[in-house]
Image (tube, rainbow, N blue to C red):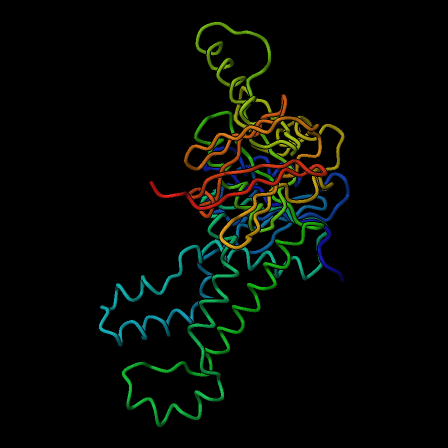
Length: 395
């Protein structure tokens, strides 16, 4: 029993069709003979509807080589976070925070999504499947998730600075003197378990040879913007994105009236996607005239999406953007392997940076760290563009 060979996470703004794409991918993988698990960690579970098969929070077999699960995040949450949450709310209540508020405050943001993904790391290590396809929470929540392993480590270390043995010794002496309840043994065990589980999850998610994220989007401005932001953060945290899936594309050919205008708008946004996501491969799924549910329709989606390809292959390797710090300056490094030498032009407005090199144009969403600085200098060396950001001069 080894580790899972491939993990593919689909995320995107709510309503873009992630579930359909995830289910279609899983069916193609199963058809190719891979033991495939498709799991949904999105609280608005629609995987069962898509596969036209009743699915619950236990793994069920839904076809040849195909298993499915809709993760019950509340169950997972209780399992990993229950004891800690109880301790935290007692801690807050001891400080005079009223009961309901302390209960709410003890819920860490993004904890529901995290606990769902902890189930992924458990299944990945079990080694019963060759491929796990995940229908993730919408992009905003997925981004919260990415920084979580580092945040959890910091947070738990701050919360439990006194070791377990030491607490056992000092509790009888210290407890009567301070109004803070000291953590008991089971709280320490729960904290250790959570940390361990989160570290394992991070290991799987950040292993770019096994795991990749695929962003599903539609040809709409707001959707493209949100996906761009997500993509930047995936790069920043070192998670690999290997493809962009454009869903609900109108068929080629001019159409009259409303559809003609819509088709024109889509063409414009298709160009925008090229500029935002090169060098990632961009795969397309057409807009179907009827609802896409059931195995037969999902096979059609896979056909359009992958042609004769194996969806488990890594479509792109590496993280095309990286940020490094040097003194009070930051260097944003972009991987531009196809760009010939040429004059580099930069245009920065708020969170966006437009880069032109010769005929190549790239639109980048800047992370918060860089958005408040000025892009000063850019050099193209060995297929990489290094852009230097430094603090704004006053006045």
